[in-house]
Image (cartoon, rainbow, N blue to C red; front, side, top):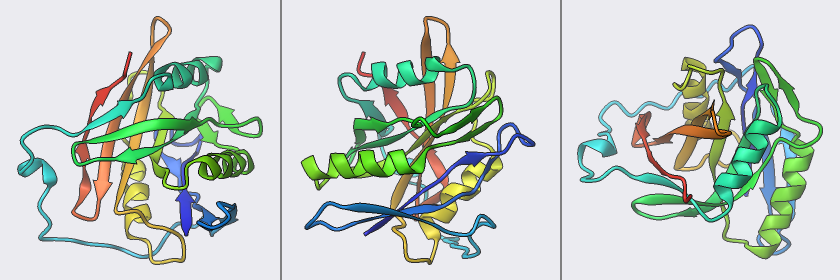
Length: 215
C-alpha cells in the first residue's frame, strides 16, 4: 500500500503550497515503509463528482478532529519551536463522527522551515511512520496540518487543489477516501488554533471539522 505525502510551501505565494507528492509503501507483513517521489509539476488527473452531495447537508452534528491525550502538547511544542512555517502529519483512527489523532510526526531535522516556505524531512517521516506501524499496523494516516502566517486561517486555493489531487489521483500511490488538511495559527500562551477541513470523494469542496483539543 502506498501513501502520498504533500505540502511544500513556496515563498512567492505566502499561503500557497507547491504540490510535492511522495509515496510510502507499506507491507502489512513486514510493516516496512518506503518513499518515492513523483514529478513536482503536479497531478494531471481530474476527479469530478457533479452530483455529489455535501455530507454537511445531512449530518445532524459536525464531525470533529479529536486530539488524544498529549497530542495538543506535542503539536504546541513543534509549532512554537520556530517562528517560521512548520507542520505535522497526523495519524490515528476514523469513526463515524470523529477522527482521533493518536500520533503525530513533526517536520524532522532536515525540514525546510522558512518564513513563507515549509517542506518536511520525508526520510525522517518515513522512519517514524515505519516505527509506528510496527506497533500498530492498523494506524491510519489522517492528513496534514501546517502553519500559515498570522491572520491567514483559511486554506489557499492551492491547498484545496492539492487535497483534491490526493483524493482523485490515478497513479500508483494510495488515494484515501477521506483526507484532512488543516491550517495552524499560533496564538499567545503559547498556544495555537487549528482549522481543519475534510476532503472526500463525496465532497471535494471540503467539510469543516470541529476540533476537540483534548486539553
